[in-house]
Every structure is written in C-alpha cells, then in structure tokens.
Length: 177
Image (cartoon, rainbow, N blue to C red):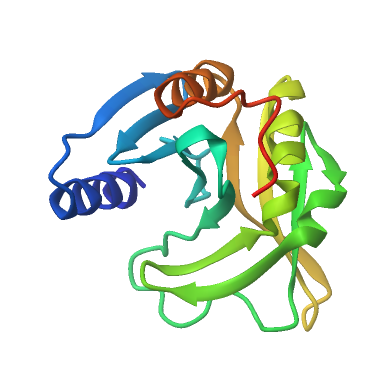
C-alpha cells in the first residue's frame, strides 16, 4: 500500500521541477505536486488493499475521485469482471455514489474512477462518516459482493482542508469543472 502511494508521489515529483508539499493526518494525507493537489489514504484495513485518491487542480477545478487497486503478491489479471459493479459504503451503509464509478485498467493498474460531477458528494459523504469508507465490487458472475478496500476516515477532514489551502479551493464548494 505504502509502495503504491510512495511510488505515485515519487514518480510525479520526478516529473515536475517543483518540489512536493506533503501533509499527513490520521489515515489520510495530502500532497501538492506542481499545480495539482492530492488527498489519499495512507493505509487500508487488514486483509484489504488499495487507496482512495482525490485529485484537484488549482481553484478546485477538474476534481477527481478514484480507487486504485493494489494487487496481492502473486495476483495476476483483472481483479474484477467487466460486468461487475462498484459498491461504496460509508459506516457500513451502502451509498448510491458507487453507481457513478467506472472500472478500468490504467497506467498504474486497475482501478475505478468517479464521474467528475459527483466528487463534491463523495467529499461530503466521507466528511460525515464516523468510522469508515469501504470499496467493494458486486461480482455479477459469482452473485456476491467482495470487499477490496476498507479505510478509516480519521484525518480526512484535516487533509482535504490542507489541499484546499494549497490549491485555493473550498472542499465544500467545488466549482463546476
């Protein structure tokens, strides 16, 4: 998990002449690299993996939310099927925002990304959480829901606030991108 985040931040830092700013609180962290701010989980619960990642350009434009899958050692191939659906839970209760995520294979591996216009609702959902956020997949062929990542919300509010200060935006009032 830490390798995924460290690699992401390290790779981006090498690609830009600007030094990265970093901040951590609880189980979340924020980083600013160039003109982009990131807010991400730094650990997942036991027996789960991956990371939740928010990205923001200056003034909060082009906001993005994604889950980046981190495979277990020896795991190969796609972690889910093309017909499988994202299920998001906050404090053990399913929320509708999972319907707004699409899975794909990208340059860093498998993941799922949220439709941009719904990122403010995801920020609000995590901000209201009292305990955790879960990323699961409804495995259509198997008829079961499989938990991939379980994350504490501890430190989220502080980390998103720091990103807002660095990139000049209000997390509670993102602009339409």
